[in-house]
Amino acid sequence: MQVNIPLKQVIDNSYDISIDTLAKIHFDTRVAVITNPKVAGLHLAYLLSKISAKELYIITVADGEEYKNQQSINTILDSLFNHRFNRKSMLIAFGGGVIGDMTGYAASIYQRGIDFIQVPTTLLSQVDASVGGKTGMNNAYGKNLIGAFHQPKAVYIDPCFLATLPAREFGAGIAEIVKMAVTFNKDFFEFLESAELKNADVLQEAIKEAVKTKANVVAQDEKEHGLRAALNYGHTFGHVIENETKYKTFLHGEAVAIGMVMANETAVAMELMSAEDALRIKTLLEKYNLPTTYMIKNTDIFYETFFLDKKSSDSNITFIIPVGIGNVTITDEISKDTIISVLNKFGES
View (cartoon, rainbow, N blue to C red):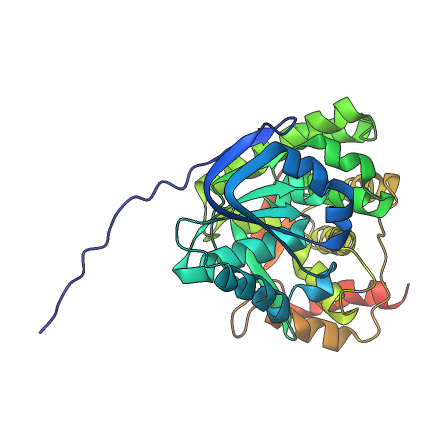
């Protein structure tokens, strides 16, 4: 006997991304703002002047990638249960990528899923982490290995938050902007080469272009079955670097910058990118003081850590490799010898 459950349906997960001064918003439900002490001290008063709710709570978790873990998720969930949040309640992610990922993940599992919105406060989260519905946390095995696709109901990008952003955090966001230009938008990359992103008006234009680029990719491949994986350019290498350094040496965008340089070296070795184009990308990253080198202590251990990547299978590692500037390939057919030869270049630096 066979019983069929007909669940085929089209679910509209569309939402708007606002890039402007935050407007006043009222929520006719319980709302919790999830943030960390640093963001709260700088910007919470401003956010609270813009939002109101039937009931409003503030939940703070520790600041930093190393706290993107089950303990922090439990802190959020316990508060929601204590305040009797229900399926009509709303979470607001107010912070950088770590806060956004954890808030979205908590929203995805609380009572099997409640709504949340993103109010990103770092450049990296504004151009990348807040858009696309990837949520999750880290564990001892790697970065974002536990999580869910759970789209926000809206994203509100207010450039005013960037006024207090430290220089390293600014550079980390630039890395993600460069990533999207190299993989999908050659004209945008050429704009970035001559642009001065420390100018507020120019930066806002770059944010808009980066968000449009990512939104177009997500619209075509929401659950990362193919095209969207290309946005992980630099991440396969970068996640290993973060894992090796216990998330304490580099910001995420800094690790991605190094990862892009490693991916570019691989592309050059495969004759998919010229050495000149690889240098152009490295030069643009270094313009914003991003690190582009890393000393690999043991290339064999570094290589084996690739297998913890979500995109890899039992015997193959999936790499995102640029094809010139403005195009990209996703492949699991690069030989171990080729990758080791690239890694050895960093082991000898």
